[in-house]
Image 1 (spheres, one colour):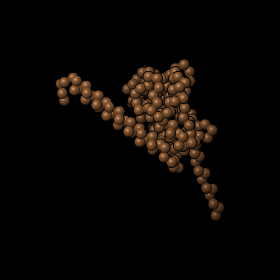
Image 2 (cartoon, rainbow, N blue to C red):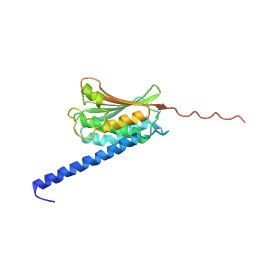
Image 3 (cartoon, rainbow, N blue to C red):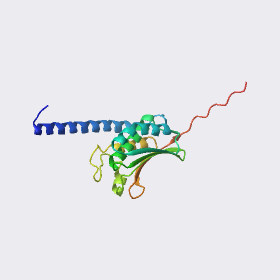
Image 4 (tube, rainbow, N blue to C red):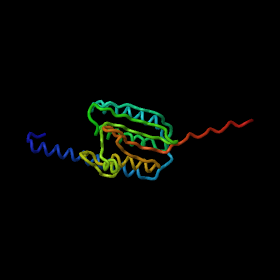
Length: 197
């Protein structure tokens, strides 16, 4: 420890930079992993969104946000449980970071056209059209969004693409933003009929 204010400021700045670089390396590793060839894993979408809500309830409380679930369907999707968790964590973290304290974040899941859809709606808008178009580009941090590594949403998009899905972000009204990921569905195998003896 030191009592010199200048040294203390330098040490604090070095710690912040070290934490930023650690986050960047972690995000780059996750991005690289998200672009590897896909395997045959599946995940239960309903279970994934409920687990995510539990993970993020305490952080939302700390920032004064209300987080709730709107589950309109689930089922199996063609993605690993860790991949679906990464999608949800990045979208929810983004929503909490950029929406006003005291606002509501809604985590949605639905079954659409045989696939799964994840949505995270927040009061972080409106976003400009350029941000909506470029939000999933690596290292892009538009407008006043200067913190973070600029890799959270690209990781989401890379996982979605790898699994044959898609990601987008758009305004839903004057103040709400909806980030959405669609993933192909996976049907449960039909059990073999009993053999007659």
